[in-house]
Image (cartoon, rainbow, N blue to C red; front, side):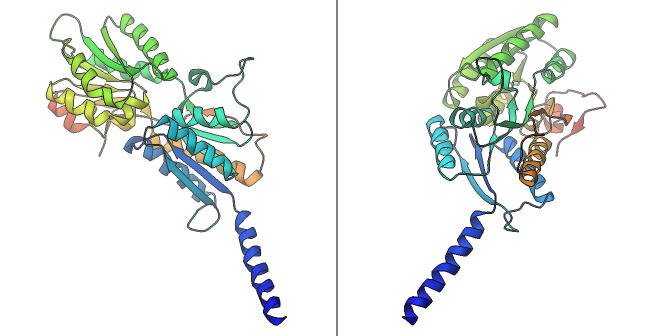
Length: 320
């Protein structure tokens, strides 16, 4: 009987500890692919949580992290696995993860980052409303205007008109919308835009090489997940052809682009993390709504600028 008593006592203690651990909030974080640029957003997100008292090191949150490595079926499986674990919230980066999350749950709060607005992601319901469980931080496309306009200011064309090349994934809504905006900007600025579609990262090198045969004077890297994940391939191919790369994504400048005006990736994630911390503190989404990213930066890559003999405006800061 004593043995039975002690076994029951030990079981109760163990169960009590587990139950206590279960009361710690669980953060499920998913990246759609491996990328140094969007990794900055993840770092910012967890730094904001830590500042507000939520840290895995301090055992005040549990963290489940997964990376789909660019595979959409895997991404869907990850979301379904998250749901089986009943997390307190799901954090998504970038847009592919956000779309997958809101397509699979309408109840668990989703905190997005490195994602366009719900309208641009085409996740609105039949009445034109965004998902009621979607929070975090998104971006409109207005910042593209400034970045694309740099090409007109800084590139000296081989001919009378600047030829700008870009690639886009036609299956990504925000990339298609960006192409429409950039096409309009090109007409306003009297630039000749040459664009080619890609289906996946595996196509990027071949399509970029094809683009370069069309005598482009500059390459523009638009907000596109395929461009993000294949950027080193784009840079290498363009540099070999002596074609400078400009972008609207500030995080891509440290990876070889000449310059950009865009959202600060770390601060983007930090802003979303502050929202998530507010939810954890209040256990309510009543006063939380998705919002636009607040922090933008003008940056340039000194090595790329020197390579192409380009002088940037004084308000542009060099990346390390």
